[in-house]
Amino acid sequence: MPLTLDDFDYPLPPECIAQSPLANRSSSRLLVLQGAAFDDRAFTDLPDLLHPGDLLVMNDTRVLHARLLGVKDTGGQVEVLVERVIADNDVLAQVRASKAPKAGSTLRLENAFDVEVLGRAGEFYHLRFPADAVTLIEAHGRLPLPPYIERTAASADEERYQTIYARERGSVAAPTAGLHFDAPLLESLRVRGVAVAHVTLHVGAGTFQPVREHDLSRHRMHRERYVVPQATAEAVAATKQRGGRVVAVGTTTLRTLESAAQDDGTLKVGAGETAIFITPGFQFRVVDVLITNFHLPKSTLLMLVSAFAGIEEIRAAYRHAIESGYRFFSYGDAMLLHKQ
Image 1 (tube, rainbow, N blue to C red):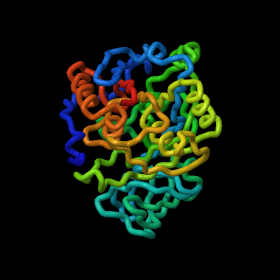
Image 2: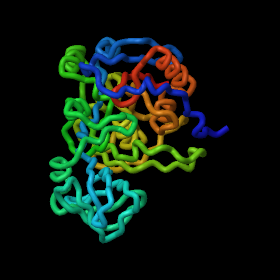
Image 3: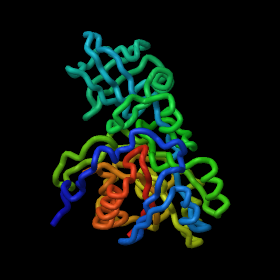
């Protein structure tokens, strides 16, 4: 029987959804899953769970202040969530309004500047900013917390909804597995002999869009931009050669590495776009271990971790996590998954 959306559903009590970060980044719990066995650990145990010679690969994208409120030239309220910057002054964005804005109309955003609606681009709108879009977004926009966090962004989120190694501006959502890392933990990993490399994948707003197709073969993923540096490709190749493991920090890192993977398991260097949809049966070429948070029911990311660690194994682990009071989603706890 082919897999359907219902195969990736599970009941989640609302109180399991973390609404705020813990006081310390690395204070989260860590559920380790290897085959059918799972173990309750702390995230600070990570250096003991990795081996000298392993390689951690992290996504160094930085979250933009991509949420902007404003009014249409007709006076109606609008909310703009930037999906991606496509040119210096041009962006693709989701626009929420009581009536869809028309091509040629103007939106006044944050009472600070006007953008022109150039038209539709699939599910998004093509907007033209009056000056450099990233500069205006960063100066006037708001941090876009995920829709399941039922509060507006606070000053603490400015720091805590970014990884400590975030560098490349372009995401509308954080690569949340990386939020657990702080400087002392990274130093402990270095002392352990675990190397670190980076890729960049700019997470789009489509990451929060529900899967609407019951038949998964009909689902089409949103496209996201990524970059694989030469140094990272070399680090992955060297790790494989010495018998180490490639440990992806987050599903965004895994999607980047597997999108850039060539037939021989080496990585194609440079920039690209990916719409990779990973479901059970996928053949992983690069990643051996995955660090990830807990994912939404019926989400493509739940399908990805099920492909990586096993459908029944993930189901059992999620049941255990709920029963054991783990915190779910962006500000929640983490899992350490070994490839099945």
